[in-house]
Image 1 (spheres, protein in one colour):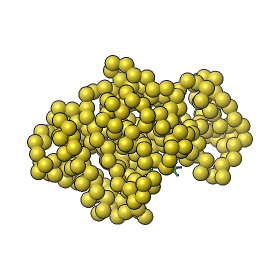
Image 2: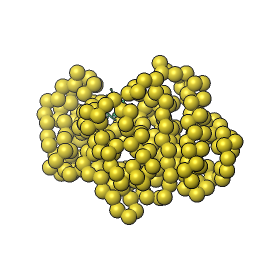
Image 3: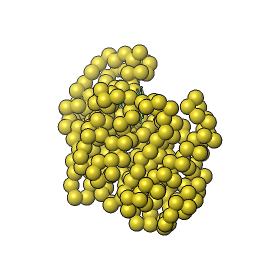
Image 4: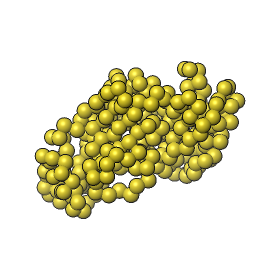
Length: 259
Ligand SMILES: Cc1cc2nc3c(=O)[nH]c(=O)nc-3n(C[C@H](O)[C@H](O)[C@H](O)COP(=O)(O)OP(=O)(O)OC[C@H]3O[C@@H](n4cnc5c(N)ncnc54)[C@H](O)[C@@H]3O)c2cc1C
């Protein structure tokens, strides 16, 4: 059980940042993960009064506030139209609707969880996190930065014209993924993100032309070989590698067919 001594509803990001510099204090997202932890939090800092729960779209990008729920990503027409429903696909398996109404984008990305669907999906897009002090950092860099006491203000996804496919394999519908895979493509540029290996999602990319299913299979094999896989209760490393190669191949073929 987690015990919280004080609660502060932040009036500004600066106030939240100052409070978050103390090790015993914590930023609250949806508290869906944090509440399962143990220990004492001296001051829990709530960002919900700062208007950070919106998804803004303009001609060049989407800007997703850290307090947006996973459910709002799932339902956002602009995001899902632009990214071929890949974002909806990456969150719709997570536990249940009530849960996704609570869990936030900030908590999900800041946590950099090894099983994260949404991190896997964002990584294949031209995406950035906006940190209060750290500024705008590509998600591909952020994923490897050690956790610190900054605040994740939001996520920016550029409209780069990519087409993207997101696929996972799960033992049961709402379980954690055994493997998670996102593939995006603009022209000859392909990006592959594989998560739940069971390690944090990582990105590999290649500039190549793929014309048919044989070439797609060869590309998938080459991409899967660049990853390290591990074994846990959900699957062996060999099984995960096999799944990753299969999902990459299916994603590439699906993107080629759509084209
Ligand atoms: C039972 C269960 C099953 C799940 N299954 C899946 C799954 O299948 N796939 C998947 O991808 N995810 C899964 N998740 C993770 C879930 O989707 C959320 O990512 C997770 O709950 C964190 O989001 P939250 O808003 O609840 O964050 P919280 O629990 O509130 O916070 C998580 C951490 O992030 C910090 N934090 C929160 N917001 C910010 C911010 N803006 N800036 C800086 N730090 C911040 C908090 O201090 C805390 O350390 C699961 C979680 C649970 C509990």
